[in-house]
Length: 282
Image 1 (cartoon, rainbow, N blue to C red):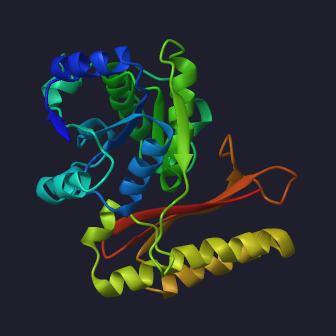
Image 2: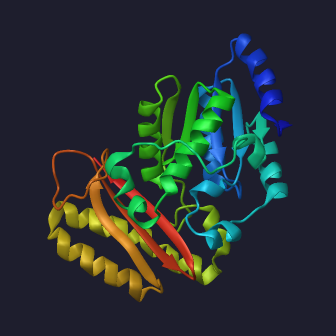
Image 3: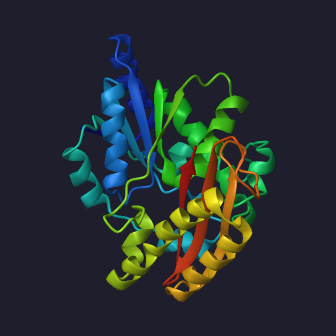
């Protein structure tokens, strides 16, 4: 594995590899790597000849400074994990490399309803920051394929919209199913901030998503959602931002099962840690 910190050196290397006919798969991360990230690397290696992973904690997507300050930084264990994976190139840029002109006058991305629902409603400006960093990384790396995790489903939808807004960036987006612990808890870098008891209680979210899915098929959806919200709170969560059934592609809320794929999404806070999860029903 080769580690690059500067754009120009990385681009020089990748240009040679591409000229030799290699297809590049790209996995952007903010570090604190876990098995979910490594599964993205594994899938990228199956589809492409060379896998690039980036680690950069992007300040523009945090709408709360406290959340940014608490984000786990684990470079030594991240590198160890990648050394034992199919990652060929690790890119760890500085903020100067990503935002050479600073962060005050970034482009505006017209994301439509995606900025007004779910994460968009609860984290103002978050997806503008996500788009800014992903566009920059895609222009630096120039991959053939991009690999993201379904756990961040709305982010995946936003990135698909970004690609529609930037047609000169030609990359295939692959969304990889969420990797979970045996309890059902979705793997997340934020899990590192939970106690063992917190992790056990946090697995409630997956149970709730499944229960709402069953209710969607067989019962009064509104009543099921309210019951499951209460169940979340009874299991140690301090607050719930949303528990919602939405159209899979537009993420607009729906009230009953329709003949199209839907997503069930949840965001809730336990031990001061905000967790998100989702399932898809076709």
